[in-house]
Image: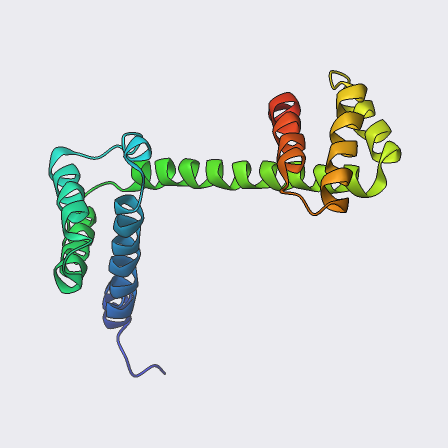
Length: 176
């Protein structure tokens, strides 16, 4: 035989999120607000902010270099403003911007890896690269590689090294 009433048990289940969960949610919104404040102006235009939130972000830009405590409190205020809004569109826009950065970084790393492979492996890497990207000029690649090797032999500044990267970026970056 049970000593408690089932109606009481149901009351306990309706208490909602715990105080700790509410605090974690508030901190997450404050962090999102800080990420918004850290965006470049061109990226900030892509975030769907209402007028009040946009004004708060603008004020945060003014506070940021000055007083740390005022900036910290203002970030809390932005987090508080975000609690009363639908943050899903804002989170999606932030995610798109972050992924764009990650994609650009990954593309840059792949270009750097190709440059290093070309320098280390020579014709073998050139043939493999031309197999994937037919629009590249074999003669220009070989010329740039010879220039890179001469620079390294004579301890000169890496002008051709950079030029090789620029050539790869201009020709195949969009295809990676």
